[in-house]
Image 1 (tube, helix red, strand yellow):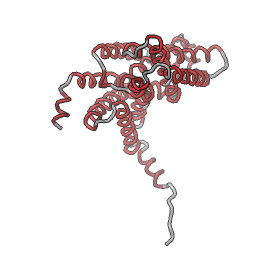
Image 2 (cartoon, one colour; image 1 turned 90 degrees about the horizontal axis):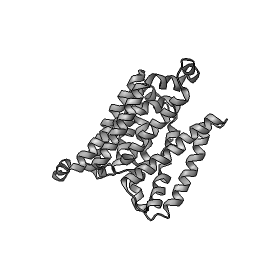
Image 3 (cartoon, rainbow, N blue to C red; image 1 turned 30 degrees about the horizontal axis):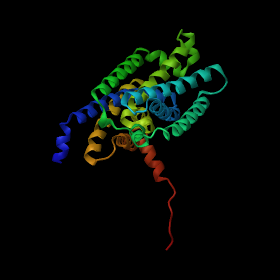
Image 4 (cartoon, rainbow, N blue to C red; image 1 turned 30 degrees about the vertical axis):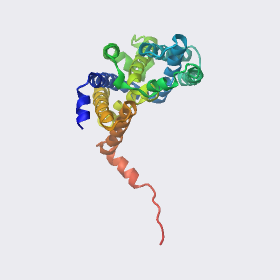
Length: 291
């Protein structure tokens, strides 16, 4: 325990807590859009596109650096994500289909590329996250992304929501539907790339889905999906950093496990769905062994 208390006073731990709070709130806030859009699986596919971006930068520069990994992940996610939107708008191919083709091709290319980089062990930090290694420069990047994401999401909340639910109505009201769709996907990619430092490209979907899903079990108010999701994401991420240090477990997986545990608990105690779920479980068939 004394060693744990000494860890609390270190700068790297304090930076990790601040990063967890900023990333957790930003992604938790944006998880409201993910929940309403019902495209969580697409986000999971998009998160895997960050690997080829990181591997490509390492292959070109010959080194795995913080900024190089961040830039590579951002470019790869933007190309695949916005490319799938463009293909869907310019053809009869659904966006999900285009995204699946792009993401599997990109991920396969990343697997091939990383075998020639000689940094497979170091890439593990980017695949599963290491928020304890964030620097002051990383914190500034997180704060800038949080400011951009939260400001634009709040400012354009109404046209974004109308575009999500009724794009034809939005167009009739003068909303630039195409611009809103690109903006939503662009902000999503920003939030996703920001979280990969904490969770890695494999687990980052957890922070973009779970917070709003937890809040939705307790309220019908759309606004609470965003602000409540931000609070849940921040508190869950900060608590997970403490747990990971105390239990000596990887921080990224711990954050996802904490959010998963909170979601399960919310399902059980929710006044709207908890009783219904418990009744469903009680009605499951059981085996009777005759003696």
